[in-house]
Image (cartoon, rainbow, N blue to C red; front, side, top):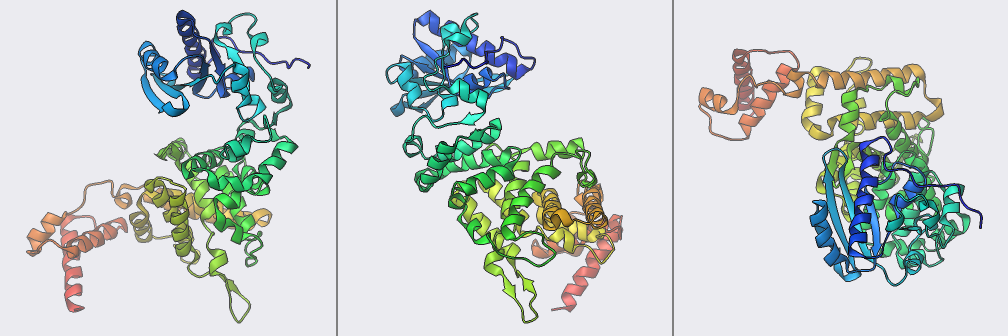
Length: 506
């Protein structure tokens, strides 16, 4: 067996994350040496360290002791908190928070016997590596790595290889993890491992929805998500996770679409990813409204660790999912998809609920799906949307308003494909930018004090509380957004006018 040219890094790697990890491992080394407990660094952190890659913020330690007892004591030593992760499986966790490096976890697992037995139970060869903690930072540390399955060579060859043919049946969540791992490392699945993945694909139905959700969303969060989704499809996994997608294959669309529904959805994910990567010196993406504030916005966490950028890609995957079910061809031969946005929002909510995505994430994604065509419909021929229309748009979509504008752009790019016309795209991008910039103005966004409030309306018109008050307030704010009124007196006059109209219509 020829040695792989890999090595462990020194204690510092230039960033707070990279410096904190090695120092944490050094503290773990000292702790276990002091207790005389054999302990090994295993898993992703060791793998990333061998690759001199920015490491994950979690450490896996296999030890010859009770992880529950050790974990409680270790939490006190590290100034962290103890989590009895899975007592029945002999696994505990210590969470450590650092002001600069953020939150790190140390997972402790009991050895089943020898370290070689522990590594044999793992999924992929590149994660079936172990390093005795006593060898951390020693001159011979590279030679101390325990590698029973030649995982270091697979790191060099950039291959994800299963440790044994039964790894997926032992834990079917590894089916999706194989794609996620290959994507995150920019590796390829070893052919036999890919064949085994496809052969065992049906086992994914045995996995708890929460675990499938975590792996699937982790794939969407990575760059090149379209390529990973297509890999999941080739391995017979994607349509088992989202069965509704199977209906999209081969469903033709009108000529304004370059791809069929399936291809359009895949390319929409790609476009959503690229429009949230900045201008990229591209004649297409330079026209997308993008600032440092926009980048920070799409990095925001919505729920369960899911960012707005990831949810945008999820909405792009689902936005036309109802087209196969709503497709109609009229007597003139024209293809239409009536109500596909509304039906798609319902389908999205059901599927994301089954995947156990948080309610806030479901609501935001479904609203994007439901309203993905609305920005385009706000145009009046060649005229840009009015302030009144933009006010209504932001009022109705609320937290999903900005995200939906970017979905609308991703949808446009993916519809046209290589036949995109520069002038038409420039017009579309200009329209979206106009909506964004107008919607951010205080009068339109509602970020300034109201001209009049509900209590004042009730006192002035001697009215009781009720829906008419909310209706009148909304009409007033809409008129102010449109630039039609600007004072309290004008607001009262408009409210009186609307109230009179309402009484006359009874």
